[in-house]
Image (cartoon, rainbow, N blue to C red; front, side, top):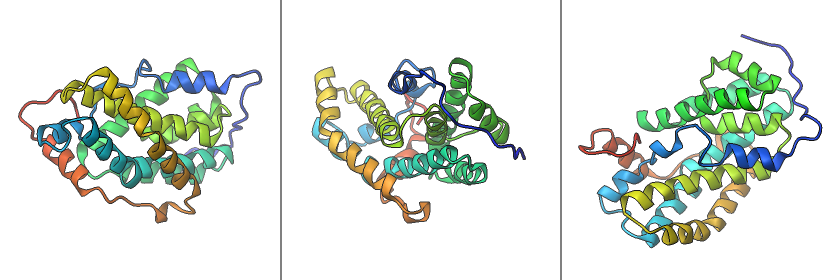
Length: 238
């Protein structure tokens, strides 16, 4: 295992907001468009059928499910990188790879995380990204990979995590717009309605004293993911 110490000081003159917007844009090539995080099955089963039911579903995902777990992992990884504590980073990365209830959820996070690390090392290089790649063979869950880049490039935790959860929410809304279907206006109204839930999730995740204090309470989300694995017709990979 690599044990070298890598400085995470941001490069002088860098624009943190510019980089964060680039990394979390739908155009960033991590393959997010191909995943629905169970939304496709939720639509198929009638749990999501309009804007109101979509908002209710995603509030639960954010505050009691994946959003909260990813947020806590993100915060822990960001702090470890910011402190140059690579053993702590390794521990968070290892937990993140296991903290998924189904194979599709694990694939969704692992594939996007690996793609994010690969393209970010190329377009926005930093020694800390190279060090993490060596330590993990490029296999990172998405929240850990984005937290790594954010901390290495000097992006504040609160802003980075808020941006990450916004992008996560927007991607699931995009999946619902395509499958319910919903109009683009309703999609944006849903995103606006979920702003408080995103903010609450950020606050809860950042304030968590330990990852041991974090868990999920969304069994229907896990059921939808399991159901999706054998769903007859599918547009998405999760």
